[in-house]
Length: 72
Image 1 (tube, rainbow, N blue to C red):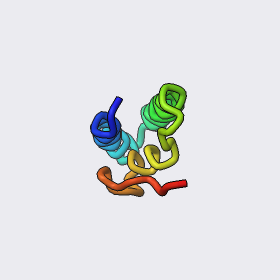
Image 2: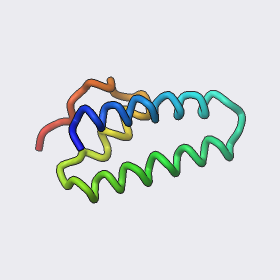
Image 3: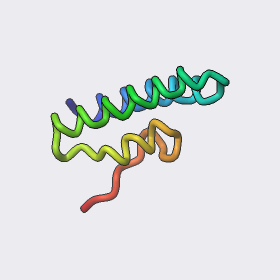
Image 4: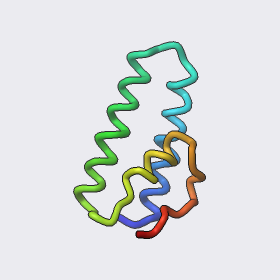
């Protein structure tokens, strides 16, 4: 996958994350949380250079979707 693909996934998941965390449905919120974390772990297995923490921060809305992870 390319960086463009990761950004696209993060944007889609951010939308779902924001939708669920703004609801009072704890089961749906936990489900999206589990999906996001499982996907991030799988992407890390596929690409050792994939920055899982940065991806999760983008999904949670803590970082801009087009931001770059720190090097090193």
